[in-house]
Image 1 (cartoon, rainbow, N blue to C red):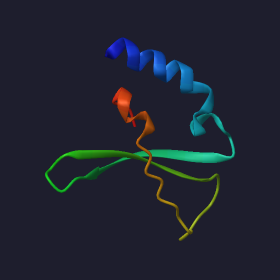
Image 2: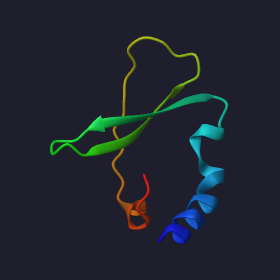
Image 3: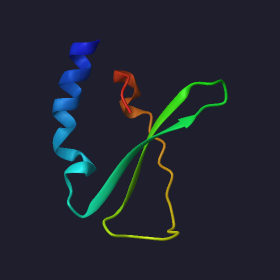
Image 4: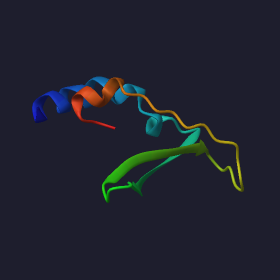
Length: 68
């Protein structure tokens, strides 16, 4: 499984929002209801401040590889 994950990361690297200089990406961990850690990303327009509208995107497609 680790080899498959590495191949998947390499395949998706070009689509990573972190490579877009118009946005800032922060990796955060949210405590889950049973003490587990839920990894998440906060993506906002570079230089944006204050309270902004948000979108929560839950997508199970990549979960087959054990990745966020």
